[in-house]
Image 1 (cartoon, rainbow, N blue to C red):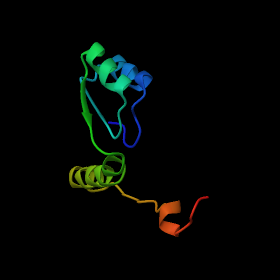
Image 2: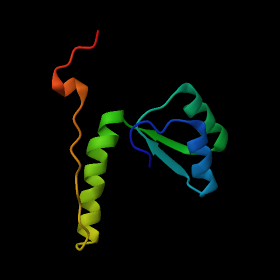
Image 3: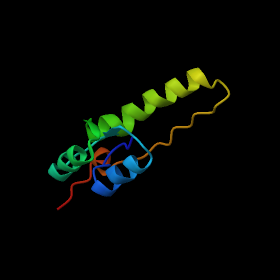
Length: 88
């Protein structure tokens, strides 16, 4: 699973090197889809934000359920869009 922008073909190739049969990412390009078909690799594409933010949060919750001793820390990141900055 690659959150956000894991759509480059070299990342798909590396996944098959580790015998992955499903590749989950937040973005795709035409080449991503074509290369996944070529590799016979199942491709699941979510949105950039949903996989990068909410997908990771859901994964953290599942990990905490299975490994109660694990400490989950969420880093807060400020985005330009949230700061009200207008780019010219």
